[in-house]
Length: 425
Image 1 (cartoon, rainbow, N blue to C red):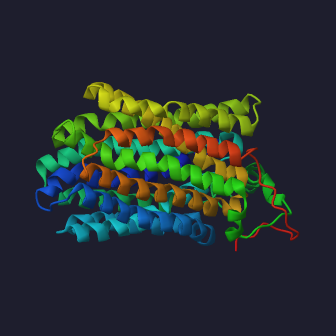
Image 2: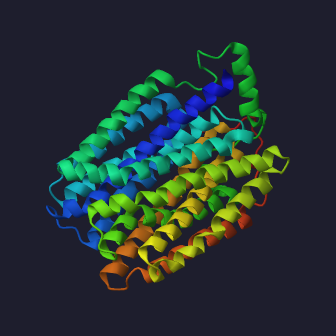
Image 3: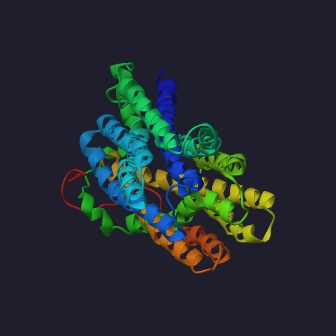
């Protein structure tokens, strides 16, 4: 029962991440329809992204600690209700400032999603299976993003753009009912016997027996933490560019209509799902075959980063080939992301995994803000997409070098303190 129940929990968590990425695609795909009522320039579009990501970054950092305090079950429930209502509120907007407020509220809610999901996975999966489970969870980003273009295009064909947001919000509220009924941490789940819970606890968190301690804020003192946060800053600058600007790139450069975007834009996200599953599976497989966690994580990360410079070719090829290159880059990115978001659970005890994951996500969102504003400025000043793709092509490679320099060995951080337990204050 234990193994089947673990994967049932993984599917539940993955569904939440799928909803998150569907909600993020609502504005980029509906933007052409929205612009018929609300004029939005490239600069304003980048400011809307910044509104979402500013709240997302702050909540990503803070919500990790909040999840550690509230517990995964209650914390994730509150987070999903908030972001579902915020997503629906975009449908009420009549101006760019109103859209910005709605997106800020959406970012506040979604900022807690990945820390909560990461902690939930750590509550159910041992290290030998964790990157596979994280790969499944990260594949949820692809499921939501693959579903978004055709479903949003279908909604726009039959209803107004406002209903894109109302329906997306309703789906999130339905998930909360499923979560409230189904989820409990492994240590408390009523379908597991006391013996099963005890055995699973030993497998999940053996390093909790450590006598070392560190305060949450003191995590910044360790190069492994700062390095991972900065690597995420770099790689997510690229990822948020893909998320927010791919539909607009197809509108602006290839003059697609909404139907054509719905036809093509899901393909890279399907490849992203393959990358999520492949990266996580490959790393777990190496560990199961006797390779060290350090080597397994770094080999998989290196291969993921290796494919990213291919994005340089996008401005020079027909759109069909551009979609293939985008697909390769999306697969590499989500393989990378799966592994980066697995590393916190490799480096620190589960009591602060949510907090550490929150800091990593904060770094990623800040990268998205900074680079999104740069992209908007470059495009409004006539530079085109070529220089943008040139910058994007380097970011994962630099991020991998940062990880190699700051995380010499992937394993529990040696917190050199004299007190007896790992604190979460």
